Length: 181
Image (cartoon, rainbow, N blue to C red; front, side, top):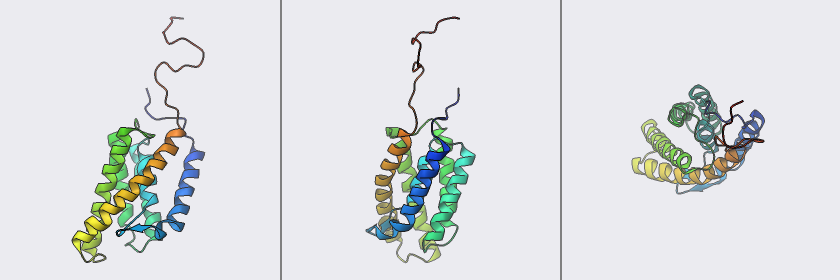
């Protein structure tokens, strides 16, 4: 029995990816609360990783991270590395069974965002971009996690709406009991 949801089409994923890229370029630099910014590419990578294979989730994470690196003033490759690894871990732990706006998917995405943002802030401190370790971890890491978590709720709801949530008994024109033929 495949765990992947086939109802999520490639077209809907491309539309969401383009919207996230436009929001990353146009809106993300404008929103900053307590040193944290919204990272739409992280949100996109993590929400797509919930229902993807581990290998394709790593590729999606790398591409999203590289796009983020090219549109920000951070060192190139750092976010690509973090999102590649984190997306792989999310896809491996979710095994494609999670997706949509469920308690487990929100919990997994928020924990991954918190870990990725803290590691990103720590790496920025080590590279000399941030001068204060507490500000890098708490100011950037915690506030970015809160902002990203709010945006991820919308992304999870949109991606969950594109898929069908069917159980074993959701057939179109038959009973819920198995009948030998």
